[in-house]
Length: 377
Ligand SMILES: Nc1nc2c(ncn2[C@@H]2O[C@H](COP(=O)(O)OP(=O)(O)O[C@H]3O[C@H](CO)[C@@H](O)[C@H](O)[C@@H]3O)[C@@H](O)[C@H]2O)c(=O)[nH]1
Image (tube, rainbow, N blue to C red; front, side):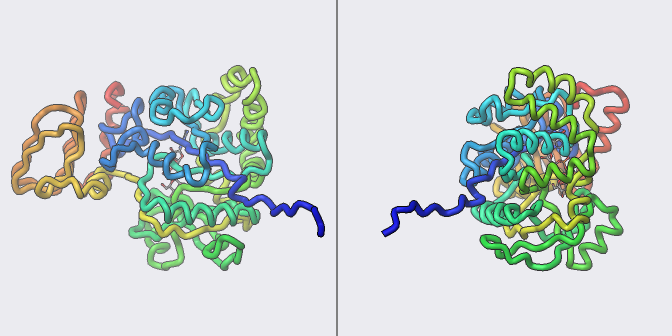
């Protein structure tokens, strides 16, 4: 009888490391979401977990403690409080925001330095997803698909012609072991205009990009190098110094020089053209919490009459009214006979609008910026 040890090839799942890029301000959720306390640091579902913490917990069964977080220096303390498990060397702090290609690309480059066979998955810190098991099932399929040499996106069935999302046109089934629903991607179009978005939705051939990318780090970096060579070179330099005493010095020197571009333009669109992108359909409930109408929907269980009320110790009186109230003050709020209102009450800024206008909050933020009144942003 042979005494040779029978070893099975390592599962791609063992090569998986999760990355959470936690940036952006969430302008359409002002005045709740601020530069100093962006959307991902808030509990916007009333679950007791912030969006960041929920994202981390959702990834646990897939990644364990192998999670890298990329965020702004200013958020270091808040992120460490919310995610005490994250080691110093796995917390990437940016001195200034450089958009998602730099954030995700640096994580890929660091992971590549540590182990070039790593499969990484990047997951936005500010989405609401349920149930977790359907998300995890889709990501497992994405990891198997990535191991077959693809950059993998997760597709969400569109409900309206949003101009804030990437659109993915899928093609043939890929027939990959462990990924029965993976499809080839024919085209990836980031944020089309409304007319094009409407055509995509009407055609029934497109899904939304959920803002998640699962890929072998080497493949992601190959496309970054081909399409953004300057960004790639800078990230390489930082990554090579990352686990050495030179980390601080090199990062401080190189990071400010990096070009700003979204990963969707820098990698996803050109990689799809090269035939290197796949999509796994997500059957979970997905919401990017883009405005207060969405906050209202996500918390409808907390309705007082027809008004959704969010906020610890909120004191809200309602009569014949509907909408959403978010408050972090102790003020009493009374709503009488008004429909579909949005009220966001904070100590130094008050927002009053309607559900239908909740996407336009950004206009107020832009106006405040232009007037130089930035202390409330
Ligand atoms: N650390 C860090 N993270 C950043 C930065 N800029 C963006 N991010 C993070 O990168 C992710 C996506 O960035 P957004 O800038 O919020 O992208 P988007 O406009 O919402 O579009 C993306 O997501 C959509 C789904 O929500 C997609 O449909 C679309 O194709 C695209 O991937 C989020 O997790 C965001 O926090 C940055 O400078 N630094």
